[in-house]
Image (cartoon, rainbow, N blue to C red):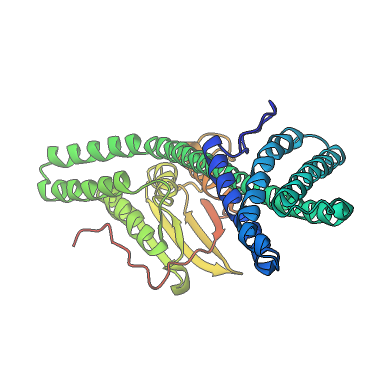
Length: 391
């Protein structure tokens, strides 16, 4: 609606929309008043003069009503933003004045057409009908205006909600990108050290002319690198697939250490389908290789155990330590974890927040036990997973 008040808000209907609905309101309301007046008054006129002139009289009176309502509209618009008490007073006063003017016009018109000058004593009845008519028109006017305002406010609310949802989505996407970048950075800190050792081992095999073992090691290395580089850091895989990945890594290392490296795996059936972050166990295994197996003359054993305990996934990886019974941790500080284990802890913090446990303990016989306690997220039976392993 076009408002004369400078405090018009953004929820106010547009000028075009206001003009359209006001024209429709005028047509519907005054057409209804015209029909009702004709059926209730004009059609029952008893005099020949009245019967001939009543249709014209009724049409003329409604035309005057339409004209007067055009004066009533800007008054309503100006008072729309005033306090409710003042607005009500202005509306009722304007209706009373306009109804009075319309009453006098109607009575004068009837006297001219019918020649009856005895209508003025009936002014109260005529005024009551006029007052009721304009109250009815005003109620329609205010009702339609409130309805349009509510519609516009609803659109504004939906628009704000959509913008807020888009901002939330962008924020979540930005956080996801940042988290994935962080996890990639943590993962790629591990690959250079492993790659350097493996290439040195391949070079050594070539020097001693063990081409078959060197080829096998290159093949396993390519498979492992494809797996580690293509798996998304945020992706979770079944523990069964993760065990295959760590075994592939240990197969590569077994080429270096031969019989000095032994691996034992004990995974409960119920735990094999639980989801874990991809490439989670490899840094732990690499830590055991570096600080236990590589420093022991006789080598050692890496054990991997997993089970479901009280609705959570419980994973243990331990080694037998060095030949002298020392613990297999990086550096002189027994609490130190080195780059590999600290990266595992940071990845778990990024993915699970505080909903995980990551502990290390020393075995009395020597060696290190790394314990992971994670939420048990099971692979759905209907989910079809694509295995990263070549057939």
